[in-house]
Structures are given as structure tokens and as C-alpha cells.
Length: 307
Image 1: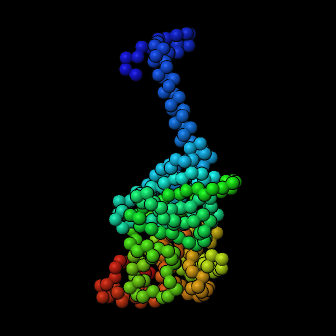
Image 2: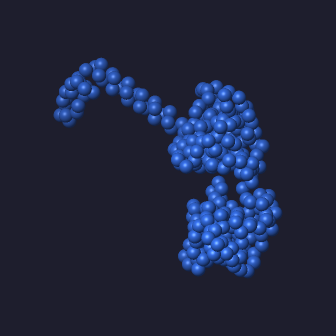
């Protein structure tokens, strides 16, 4: 502090404020810092993820606290929920415009203890009821429809209750398109295949090693042996040291009836809530025909090595 007079006292030459008033101010400052540290310890938060506990909220559970997340994807986890929270989501990517921004949430498998609403101008609309979600259900809404309002339901015993979900922000305009995490079970047209090659999160040439069906999830998990890695996001496919080859898994709808078989395919798809979801997967020889034909006519939307 400017103008403070410090005096040297004792053989250890420790510095102490010479003014009692200054000493009092320093003690008050230290107390405020300690209280601030204690308050911040109630939860952990960063730009993408928030994790907190309702146990630290009990004394003022009638208050509505604000949570701010500035990321295109992340998670929210509220243990022992009491009271209510408002979750404000904003993208950290300039290309994601709020004008056409869509927010999707995927509740944790055992999420319970609170209702999740959309709140706008003081009005609430139920988005996810307490314990009413299914494992595969995705809930989407437009950015301009409101903020997420999470309110704990009355509980005699709040132990083991955790309300949580993953979230993603996209620029998709049609909310209805986002409720299905895989494309319908039909062959893609030539145009759809060529666009998928240019815009997908992953593009690989490979064969189907195995297919595992999960009836409860209504999904199939496809094990892929990769012979050519063109592009990938989030390291879906890993290089196996034992075989020196790339391998990975892709999910699709159970109703598509995918089975192991011979031959190479071109697998394309998108990452959705941390999972690789299949979109177009033509046989590689058919893709070569499409690609060469479009190339000869100058209609390829992008270039990709076909060797």
C-alpha cells in the first residue's frame, strides 16, 4: 500500500506494519481471501465443465445460482442437488453463430434428483423430467428458446442423487434433425457420399472385423480394421503396436442390421457426445467409381487421395 511505513523488529528482521489500522486492514484482506477460497471450493469449474454439490447450497437453497459455461461441448454434474441453478451456455468458437445455434444435452445414464427446464422471461418449460430420460435420448433446443434451469425435486434422502448431462452446441438449424444420432438405414446417394467425404469428422478405408449388437441401447458397435486413415477427430482410431495397424469402433442403429463381411468400405461419420456415429459407408470400389465420375465432370466438392 502506498505510504505504508514498515519497521524492522526482532533479530529475524521481520517486516510488520507500524500502524495498528494498517494491520487491521491487512487482516481483513486476509479474511476475505480465505472466504473467497472457501466459496470457490464449493464447486470445480472451467470453460467447458462444471461439477458441484448441493450440500454447500443447503443454507441458501432458495437462491438460484448462476453457472456459466463457454465451450462448444462439455459436461454438468450436480451431486446431492438442492435448490436451483441456471446454466448459461455460450460457444467459444467464432464460427458458431448464436442466430442458428442449437444446444443438445444427453443426460447421464443414472441422472436423477432434479427437473431440467428451459427458462425464458421467467417462464419454465419442462425439457427433462426427473428420471424420465432413456439412455439414448438426446434433448435439443434452439439457443433463443432460453437458458437451462435445473431445479432439485423434493427428496427425503438426497444421498446417491446426481443430476448430470453432456452438452454440445452446433449450428444445425433444424432441431428435429438432431434427435436421431445416426442417419437412417438406407444407402447414401453419390452426392451424399462425396459431401460426407469432405465434411465428416472421420473418413477411413477399412473392413469390418466384428459387430456387437446391444438390444437395450438399440445400437450396433462395429469394429473396424483400417487400411487407410484419411481424417479423424478425437482419436477414434488408434494405432495398435501389436499389429502395427489402425483399429477403432463406430456405432450405428441396431435396425440397420450391419454384419461382418469381406471387402473394403469407405467409412464416414461424425463425433456425437464423444462417440463415433456412422453416416455413409459405401464399398470402396463403388466410392472410386463415384469419385472418378465426379472428377471427370469437375463436380468433386473436395479432393482426397484414392490410392
